[in-house]
Amino acid sequence: MIIRRSADITPSEITPKEIYAERRRFLQTAGLGLAAAAGLTSGLIHPAEAAVVQAQTRRKLTPIVKSAYRVDEKLTPYEDVTTYNNFYEFGTGKSDPSSNAGTLHKQPWTVSIEGEVKRPKKIGLEDLLKLSPMEERIYRMRCVEGWSMVIPWVGIPLAKLIDWAEPTGNAKYVEFVSLADPDQMPGVRVPVLDWPYTEGLRLDEARHPLSLLAVGLYGEALLDQNGAPLRLVVPWKYGFKGIKSILTIRFTEKMPVSSWMRANAHEYGFYSNVNPEVDHPRWSQATERRIGEGGLFNRRRKTLMFNGYGDQVGQLYTGMDLRKYF
Ligand SMILES: Nc1nc2c(c(=O)[nH]1)N[C@H]1C(S)=C(S)[C@@H](COP(=O)(O)O)O[C@H]1N2
Ligand SMILES: [Mo]
Image (cartoon, rainbow, N blue to C red; front, top):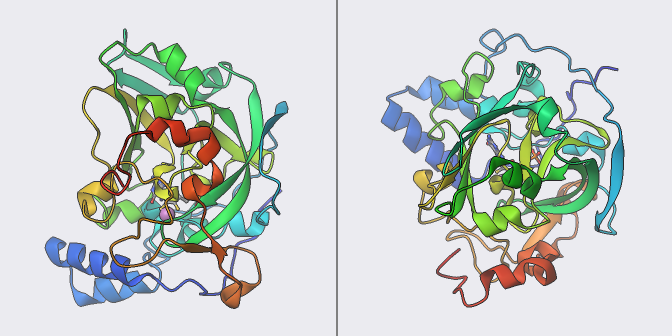
């Protein structure tokens, strides 16, 4: 089966001002001209310049066990989940990843396990999937930009990989690094972020049963735009923690610096827990718009503390000032 190219995405999401400003700043730093900046606002990559975009094959994943981790809310339609994306390596517009993706060379995909581990190791995706049965989990997702989705992910608990990796007693954090190959990802030629995309979790957050290494959604292998072939899903944190197309998992003693912290430490903290009481410095986090629910003028819903997962993850943060550690 071939997915339909999404020619019909409404520009319902205006590029947030802050990202535009950020982008201009980076472009100025990079010494790129106005023409480039203008191109960026309208969809990043000129077709002739893009890597050859191929229609992506949809592949069913089996066997999948249903997990008890599922929220009882209407699923965001597949079409939205696969065409409304943040994946800056494929462009900064919401429809850029689905239009520009299809270029990732996913086979073989080997993840490097490094740093504070008894032995550094490499593991191929197929072996990684032998560590634990694939589970389907329905998670609520919340982006820092103010929109949310409900997605049936397929993956294995991150804790299973961590156990297999055998971190040393010095390991306190886990750093994740994405692929950053300009031949496979046209957006990497533009310095909107300091590539490769990097994220991190505290080791106990990473070991939490909700933390998932996802390989699919809606029962099928991830398409490139959703972070094929392997991405992180941490449902109580803002979406940007969910790093895509992971190549490296590094155990560290010191807190990793994520790409977003490097871009703007004042606005993006390490923890990034969904918290309606802590506003982004330039906009509120009190409400959210559920994608797929009636277009631009749909009712905004209240954002929940820890995205609704407080009963499960709250104890990870007892005694911490979540305004300071945002
Ligand atoms: N490598 C990489 N991972 C990334 C991003 C990115 O730009 N590059 N964007 C993040 C952001 S901001 C969000 S909201 C989620 C979106 O995931 P989705 O497109 O599968 O919904 O991916 C996150 N992971
Ligand atoms: Mo996001």
